[in-house]
Amino acid sequence: MIQSLTKAQNQVDLIRDQDWTRADMLRSSQWQLTIPAVVFQEFHRASADPSAGLQHLDQLARTIQQELFDGSGIVLLRGVPLNFSELVCRNFYLALGQRIGKPIDRYGLVYDVTDLGRSYQTSRIPISQTNAETSFHTDSSAIDCLPDVVGLMCLRPALSGGESQVVSVPAVYQRLAASDPKVISLLHQDYIRDIVTPGSVFSLENLRKNQFPIFSHQGRRGLTFRYMRYWIERGHQKAGALLDAAQTAAFDALDRTLCAEDLVLQFKLEARDILWVNNFKVAHNRTNYQDYAEPDQKRLLLRMWLEQV
Image 1 (cartoon, helix red, strand yellow):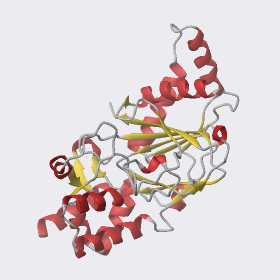
Image 2 (cartoon, one colour; image 1 turned 90 degrees about the vertical axis):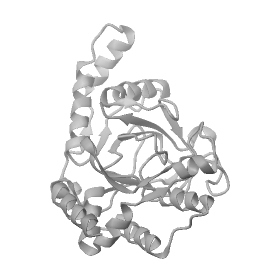
Image 3 (cartoon, one colour; image 1 turned 120 degrees about the vertical axis):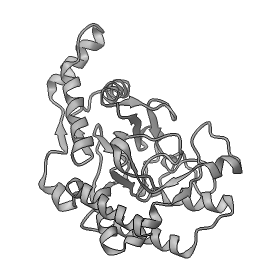
């Protein structure tokens, strides 16, 4: 235990300059970018002539990479023309994503995030296919699928709700380490995660193999955070290994800190906005939402998972 607590304090020292609060982000404009018109002009030329270069798109991708991996871990892009068709939006989004990182196709290169009218509590589906609040989490509960970056492009916002919330993992880690280092030690333990990834085959053997820590320290990634409480609790329930009181209390402390008002940054993605987040340094949440009745107006976001290259 002493070794674990010392390690936690060492990690606090290493990440102290990587954290941010809500107030920090409201004072900064570095994480918010308006895409220059020349990027779209160049993209249209390349669409007609594949031999044409995309130097401005390449430069935009490098700027995004720097903020994702060496800055706040968040980039909010605005400026995609509203008159872009859905197909053009998909192509532009994919072209940009492929320059930021290597796409992970576990759900397809570009995955539609929309409410299918079902419940993740009664059906074996990801929460992204519902209109429920997701709670603060990182994407992917599979041990063999580790997206470094999550992208979300909004094609159509909801009628109401569906706001995005983000929080700095280094800030959460530091606050927990200062208030109760024993919680940090518990969150470094392995936890079973239920899997609903397409193509996954459920068995108790596969389930018990799918366990890893909430906080860990992984080479170039440094401090790494992988969490969605619901899939952990359901995984342990299915495996017949219920969480004990100390573990549950540690999760409660983590959730309280993730939701701390002075840490959480909230905004709404409007049509054509694109959000990129570092999936190990930033936890994100989507509030519940009410949708339009007309199918062609329902909330639709496009998600990409990327591996850092």
